[in-house]
Image (cartoon, rainbow over all chains, first blue to last red; front, side, top):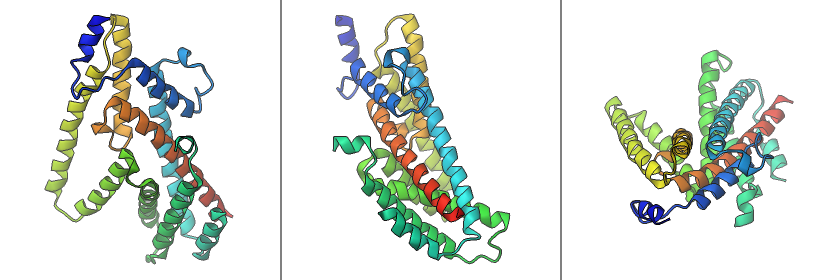
Length: 92
Length: 173
């Protein structure tokens, strides 16, 4: 126990980051991931959660790319007035 | 404030939608010579993607490190496109050196245990480093902030994707 305390005193900036803090944050992330959301936290390692998070962010980036491409193609053929209509519809 | 942390607020959705549709209208207002050429489509795709990311970051404003980093990156990119190539190189190097400093910081933040647990810590730190590359501004964050910012970033990204899909569906009618 005392050795753990001396190790954490080596950290710069004085802020001690506990395991519990990190576990809480990792559990919060796990809730956001679509694949492993339903599994209990003790069965999924923190490293696995981070890995799935990275994969999920990459897939979201790809989706944004894909949707931007589709929008670009659609804009070539669509009327301007629809933008005003859509805005008013989505505001409600 | 805590409950809005879990669900993207409707005000965030409407702020994003307003900004994004406004940007789309501006992009659409350009009258190129051949609007359906592959080059035009590609350029428009780039502008739309930038507009989407910028709209979301602007809607979050400077409340989050990742949104500040995104806005800073987009603004400096448009400035650098006018400036010389030498300046762009120097911006890149400073990012790499600060990242190396933060890598060391991450491994000290996690307490080491036995060798098998050390392997797990190594994998954890390795994944955290990959996460740093994906989350805007992640290079300069400590581990706790990185995990917190990642959660918010993912929520906003899913909102962005959801709203962009709705817009695409409308335009496809």
